[in-house]
Length: 139
Image (cartoon, rainbow, N blue to C red; front, side):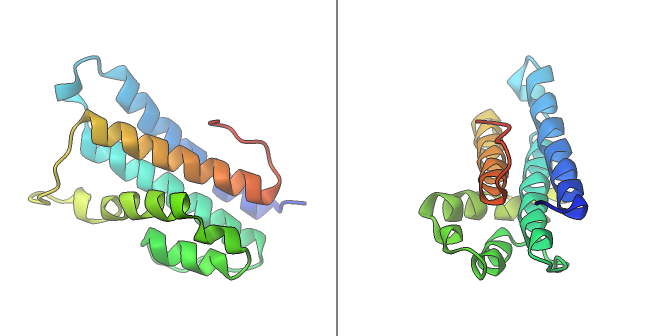
């Protein structure tokens, strides 16, 4: 059974991903999409999903934002966290935790990158649900 604390982390994770999706979908003109904000929320949602898994294993999440580090911590409980696709999604989202929040970040951003961020966040969230025995939301 999944703990109340774990479900709360997942709820916050889903809120971030849903906000990113809404921001992406609301703007009809791709040039006016707030790409930095969308990608930040994608990363935050995925980060919180990984931390939910830690909480489900009785581990208080560390105050780190690096997706790969969080994934490695999770792999101590489940070898499937070494999955190449998961590694790729985490690596893609890593720069969007901190770097993107400030001017002059030198990242190339467009709607295709935002869409990829949304996809990665959703895949990580669904992977966590699968590992926790919960229904996937974004499949």
